[in-house]
Length: 141
Image (tube, rainbow, N blue to C red):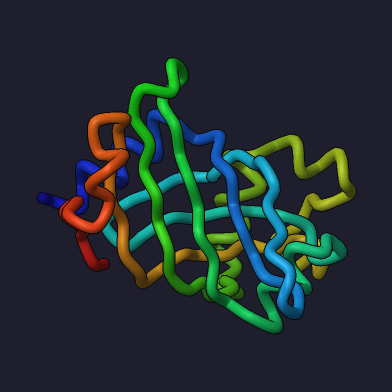
């Protein structure tokens, strides 16, 4: 399978569940992915959030995206890195104007966290796969 199918699925189903780890305790939250492309999946948050602190200690995550009718899911696991590039951060502020509600108006604002799930593994899942999860094709990126 082509990774573009996975990026397209994520872009069409941006609300997702993202899991981090705090010590030995998994932490899951619902959020909306910023965008996906051939390089991976991009997210935005605020550095004061527990999620960002967890990612700084352990960059491994798992994300689950669903269709609106819950008939198909995509699971993605891998590692994230934080993005310091000011152009990319400015693009985030432009495309996600709600961050201005948090006082984030400039790309060098230390409250802005932009992170990229840049390497890992992804696969699709449907109910018919329930008993055959280990046989589902996966794509590495």
